[in-house]
Length: 70
Image: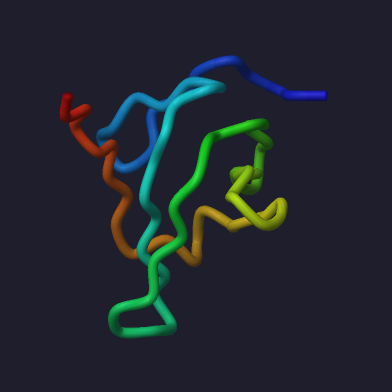
């Protein structure tokens, strides 16, 4: 169960269902791309093509909403 439907994270407004790319602090070029499925008080739960990933806010270096290209 989500705690919130939308939340501002590092100046970017995220809502459940948004597609995002999250860059992790501990790795130089590691990113996780997926759909936000839950917003918790301590982190995000993303649904990727292969799995569900939980990322703590403290581990996020940068977060981006990719622009849709048609």
